[in-house]
Amino acid sequence: MLSKYLYRRSFVTSLLAAPFLAAMPLPALAISESAARSLVTKMVDDINKVIASGKSESAMIRDFEKLFIKYADVPIMARYAMGVDGRRASKSQLRNFTKAFQGYISRKYGRRFREFIGGKLEVKSTRKIKTGYEVKCIAFLQNSSPFEVTFLVSDKSGRDKFYNMFIEGINLLLTERTEIGAMLDRRKGNIDNMTSDLKNAG
Image (tube, rainbow, N blue to C red; front, side):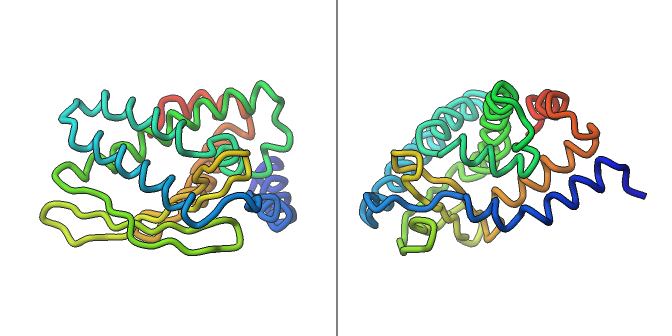
């Protein structure tokens, strides 16, 4: 049987999911298809440089975190990943969570990009979507079939940034929202304890 907290969070999540999703980044009119493609092209070039650097895993992950900060709309991604629980978080809790989320994503997906050693990413296509632009890339790995990596780009924060990523069709934000929700459940809704756990996850 669900605890009172789990029941409440499950109910509130269902009740507020649509409005919260509606509040996700909508493109300001300034962003263009060429700007979105240019952003991802530059990011892919930087990712490929890290992949080919020959650095240790820890050094590569530090580099990936720098790229995540540079190219991703980290605050918006973190708020979405926390879900409706973000509504009850204080400013300091949101700030601490965003910092922990930044490191967590860099470790988790940096290790995934590290699998590309000997391969590369190539930008293939760009198209307009409701929330900005979708830029599709193809990942070429050694001894493996190519697969798709997609970035969603908007300028909601005032600068062109990507705010979601799909690897082989897996939605990063939805995946992490589920993972972080489970971490909160294990901590009975304690945001500070969940944030501490996140610092060592990934």
